[in-house]
Image 1 (cartoon, rainbow over the protein chains, first blue to last red):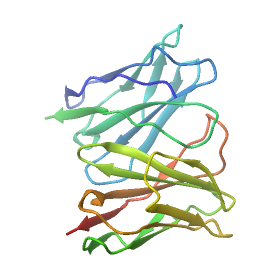
Image 2: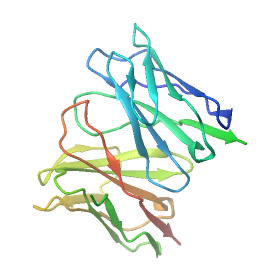
Image 3: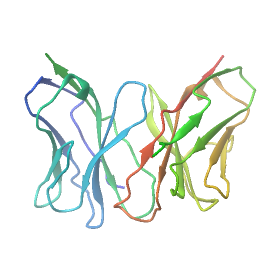
Image 4: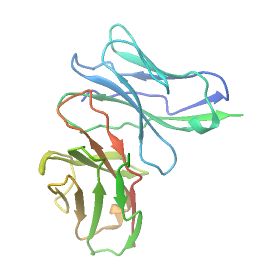
Length: 110
Length: 115
């Protein structure tokens, strides 16, 4: 699986949009970009995923660059409950063996 | 619907003992994978089972083993426990595998402390 690079930490003001970047410059054509988050001491929670096109769901939006070498997760109106570690993961078709990096620790502040 | 259930949630063992952790996947999910999370190494993949067969295995010693039953429930076992095995062990299930478009649902984890 391609490796990903994320900033170790970010702050965001409550109510503002949180934009979390991820670099995956070695991604292959059949690999998906997934985002999960982990709130302290809980299991990771799925947020969103995409292959080529931008995606949006009730939790977030995923913007993937045209060359697919990077992506941005957008939480449109961050709340205190969005404080968590966010993991960007690249997944191929070989099964469920996810390779987690260090993630980004997002701190939403009042 | 019920989520992924892991038992026990917390346990304490001593070095040299063995431990068995259990995972009940979401109904209808046939793939179960296991991960170890420690402060130093982060989240690391242990193994994955699909239809009672181990399909993928991470880079862990043979002391770590697992199995999956016909009802998709899975267990993992760690023998001859070491202090470094202290970790949060996470189980995740999904409908199937061999597809990038395959969302994993994680359980809350089993926190193992080895003294």
